Image (tube, rainbow, N blue to C red; front, side, top):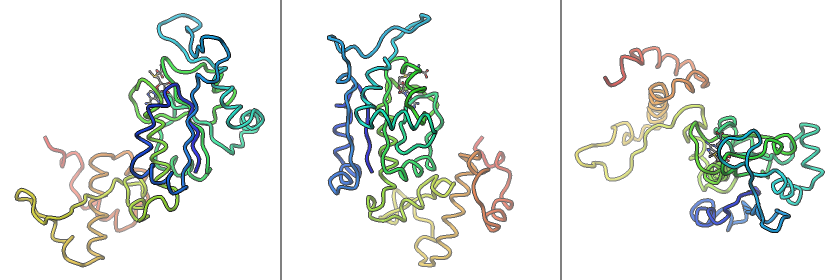
Length: 258
Ligand code: SAM
């Protein structure tokens, strides 16, 4: 999997990508991350990357041309133009923006399947809209709040997609059970010791009965999802057994703490 990241602050990524799973994935040759400083693609003597907005108002807007030159250099001008003209995407060109579609686990899975993606990190008030018209294939938001730049959102996308690259995680069961992978939030975990400050572990987990453990975990996932994210429960694929379990519960409202 290859990631190309366009940013004004490449130094922000260094330690985050050097460590842990993303660091190991690069060392193992499973993932390549290329950082591109947008400032390197300016053509004026002062290397200006932003300017005041047309129509007035506060803040600065990132100029289109340095970003477009960077994309031409990284992907080739023909591919960038062809993707926009035909709608057939070979390499997603993703703008991180709070005005984008929500980035979620199904999107991470689809992005992993491309094998290569480009991420554009905005700053200031954002980027000149013509970037979207000329090059961007996807606009993604990591949540309904505003950060100062697209670097942390880009890190989130890289990390979520990297976890899905075959071979990156030793045990792929972890990915299958992860929250959102099955359309539900994940069940609670416990590890040793058996007692922590007077609190034990649910008996079922030490019973050795794998069928009961699987069912308990599924029910816990259903309970958590119903309580915390009824919006995703409504879209989840549920078995008849799941439906029976949920219909036997008291109303969600009455189980909320007061
Ligand atoms: N004026 C913009 C708006 O209201 O949509 C916000 C600009 S924000 C201060 C600067 C940059 O941070 C954006 O261009 C984007 O790249 C990034 N950013 C901030 N919040 C984000 C979010 N929730 N998801 C993805 N990118 C975000």
